[in-house]
Image 1 (cartoon, rainbow, N blue to C red):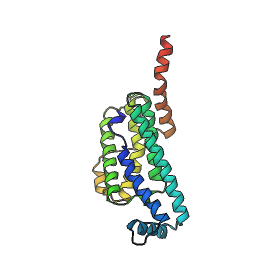
Image 2 (cartoon, one colour):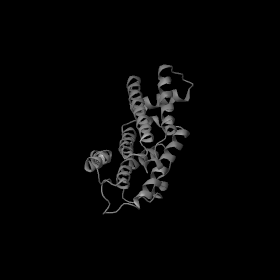
Image 3 (cartoon, rainbow, N blue to C red):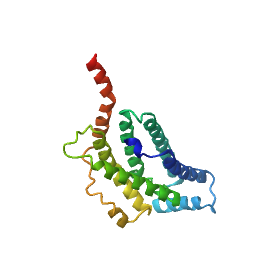
Image 4 (tube, rainbow, N blue to C red):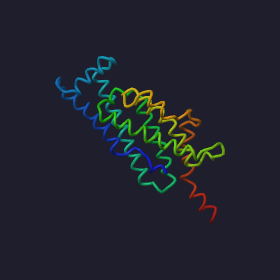
Length: 208
């Protein structure tokens, strides 16, 4: 089920290309370049030095690379319970990237479009799976794990999307998500999704 909607390589590549362009402009500044002008604006409005910008760019590229590797593992384990674990980890890494002060790198029409598509996809998946989750749903159920994970990442996606004007507050209200306050922490969700990984082992031991 997690493979029905997931971050794609194309989505991450959009962010990577944007950040790599920032990195190039820091090393080869060109006052006429739109990205160089944006970097100067970031430095002026945030008080961040060029050295600090370089550090943030390097950190962000490392996290994006890690995210790509998680997506690859999801595709490789699409038919195994372990894919849920990577889904949870990738969503929390996405949340970290969105929450961790990198928002000023997300600009341009391509990035806005990516935010819009990613958010709408998450909203659609959340609303679809929410129908299958009730108070009686076991916490180890895949629907429960995905829904609770999306509650965390959706909040960050919406806040970032509003910041880069990917959509308006009126459009967010029209999502009709209701209360998306998470009931489970990242630690608990990772633990619950890890249990799925060992279920085949337990079954084989029980049958032996």
